[in-house]
Structure formats: C-alpha cells, structure tokens
Figure 1 (cartoon, rainbow, N blue to C red):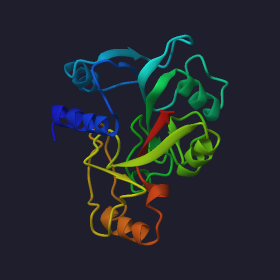
Figure 2 (figure 1 turned 90 degrees about the vertical axis):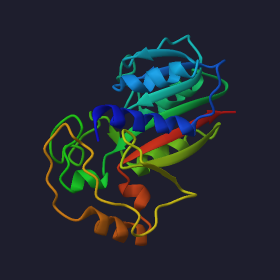
Figure 3 (figure 1 turned 90 degrees about the horizontal axis):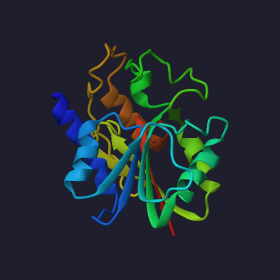
Amino acid sequence: MDQVQKEKYQARILDLLILDKKQKILVVNNENPIFAEDLRERGLSVEETDDKIDMQASYDVIILFGMLRGGLTQSTMEEVMKFLAARLDEHGQLLWCVDNKFGLKYWSGMQYEKGGFFRTLESTENEDVISYQKIMNLLLEMPEVDSTVYYPYPDYRYPMEIYSDEWMPSKGSLENYDFNFEYFRYRFFDESKVWDNIIEEGLFSEFANSFAVKIERR
C-alpha cells in the first residue's frame, strides 16, 4: 500500500459523521494532509490546529486525533472532553480518534507510532493512548451527550473496517496486517489466531488497536 492509499483510507472515518456544506469544522492534531483536503473538497469550512483551541470559538464538528494537551495540560480527560463538547454548537459532533494503550498490535511486536516497542503498555499518562475502560468511565461522566465507541481495524489511520458494539468482528474475519510502515516490527505470534480467541471470549473492545469515539451534543 503506497502513502496516498494509506492516507485515503483514513478519510473513511468521515463516514461516521453527518456532514453538510454549512458546517464549520475544526481538525486537531492532524498528521494526514489528504484528510483535511478531503473535507475541503466536500465544500466544508475547515480549520486546523496543533493542540490549541480558541476558548471562545464554537464548531459544528470537531475531529481530534490523539490527546488534547496544549493549554489544558493539568486537566483530566473528563475535563478535556467536556471542554470540547462545550465548543460544539447545538447538535454538534465530536469525533475522537485515539490509540488503545492495550491494543493487540503493540503486544504482537509492532512499535508505537511515535517509536518504541511496548511503549504504550509501559506508558504513564504522558502518551497519546488510552484504555477501553478509561473511555467507558469518561463517557459515564458525560450523561448530557450521546456517545458511540467505534473500533477501526487495523486502526483509525488505515480503517479497512469499522466495527461497533452493534457490529463486532466474527472469528476468522481479522487478518494479519503489516500497516505501520514507518518502523521495523517483530511478529511474536499469529495475530489472526489470537484475534479469534479474543473474539470468542468477548474481549475485542479491550484489545482493539484504536478507537473512534463519537460524541453528539443534544
């Protein structure tokens, strides 16, 4: 898969949003130029920022990649998500794409996208990763919004499939993918066989490689 193909795959997460040309969109921490370009080609008004958001601005759609740290360094994730939800206009949508701290790819010998084997598994709160349980706890603290957790596979960068609690993968449906092309990787086990066991035990959510969390303001 060449770079252009990889970058176009990420645009598929836009299918999780309801978009129209009247919307004002903010994209935070975007590392994929084709992603924002795709939005503009749809006639949408797009702003991009590297981790810092105008405290007074409001948007119809906010797309966040990783964590938001700039200007909110001392805030908890609950406070950050509530801050972002407050930046949404009525019926606005927030799509948060983030890696799973315990994603199976990191156990199986793939380096973290910022470099380093097992870096996420050993990480403190300083990495741009989060666990499934922490996301669930966070959403429980936000009863004023509607939320859905999606599981892009292999991950949100190259989502060949996007699963949800209503549509989970079945045994035999997840293959081995070498999709991190920036770093050398090991392969400590056959991921497809491990995925089958994880799916059989009902643990796919906990070991999914990444999440796309959709939050909608009522």
